[in-house]
Length: 292
Image (cartoon, rainbow, N blue to C red; front, side, top):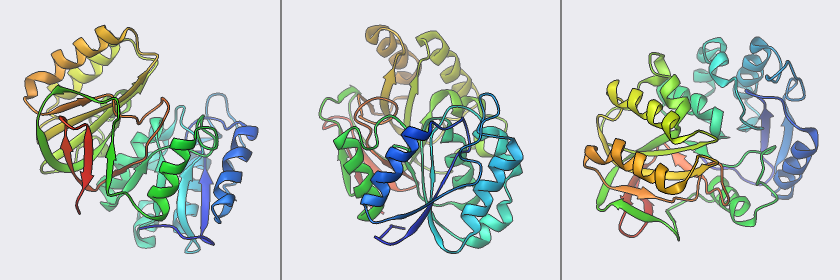
């Protein structure tokens, strides 16, 4: 599903409070693309580290998705709180409304997983309207525009490196490591069936804490069916040498191709990844090609 100029999109805040200045900047970018933008009622709210009460944030998600005029639902920012609303969303109304364009990253990993589990639709892991790069980083901004309006056939990592060489095919999914680990045991914590390419990234987590999350995922069998791994940005996650060594120690024994340095996640630039599409990973050429 793609957007076109004139389409209406809803901006919601399912996680943390939203900075008004940052949101205005992001909305201006969306409007420059010809989109009509509706901000959800509670997107400007704040209850401590949350953008309003759980029920209100879940209602904003449900109402935006169920509105037949809305073509896309964009999350304003991450932070924390998306997991708290998953079970409060009216999934039957969401399912009846059918597929929509969906964008978010970081804490929004939980909603990507829930939408994949319940609707089986493609979602976009990429820059958010009140985030740090939309309208500020040209590469990230153009990558999101292209993903939403024309689609993506291939993406590459100019500075990518094969930690484990090889080529693999599978359904692309994943997100922020700590969110994936804390979803284990919930319905959305069950990964898609079949062969998979998994994208992993995180921010402000020491290598030992990422080790702990990856170990939890490994012990839970979450990596069964994974045929390739794409490692994105690890902003403020300690010394690169220690981080790389830990990732190779934990993931190398899986015996699948592993690409390091893919420009997506919390760093700059942030390419937009279409979760739910079939992809071919070449760790040797640091590239993803989509073929569904």
